[in-house]
Image (cartoon, rainbow, N blue to C red; front, side, top):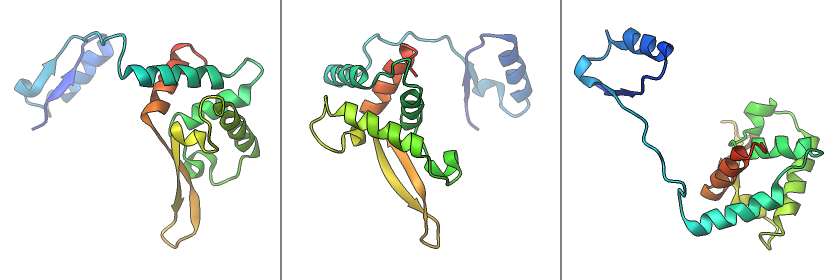
Amino acid sequence: MPTLIAEISDQSLKGALEALAPFVAPENLKLFNPIALPDDQGDGELNQLAQKVVEAVRPKPTQPLRKEALQKLLSGHDTFTNQGGEADPALRNAMGAISKALRSVFAHDHAMRRLAVPKKTHFPDGTYRGTVYSLTPLGARVRDLLKAEKAI
């Protein structure tokens, strides 16, 4: 039987644990207190590179499409699921602007692949389905930094 690990922090969680009690043996139900994470999680070089990327791509208040594009790119966007299979020229333009901004950090044409790797997907009959973006460790760190400063 699986072990359930949870932190009791409010009444709704207590209710959820009580609801699970008939399905989980009491000895498998474990409670814990949160453990503080260290301030610097990860490699120092990765953090320095992520800071440079954040400086290059941080959306200005006058760039709402860049903000939206960063949110999508850094969340594992799936063009089929999220866009219903419809092309989005505004998103494509915003992604192009992000790519151009990244050239100040990476001196190559496919700089976006350093943040998220695109993978074309197909239906079983072989027709194109869409593109799924898989986040890289650098992309995840950039996302965390941008979220921490509430830029995305």
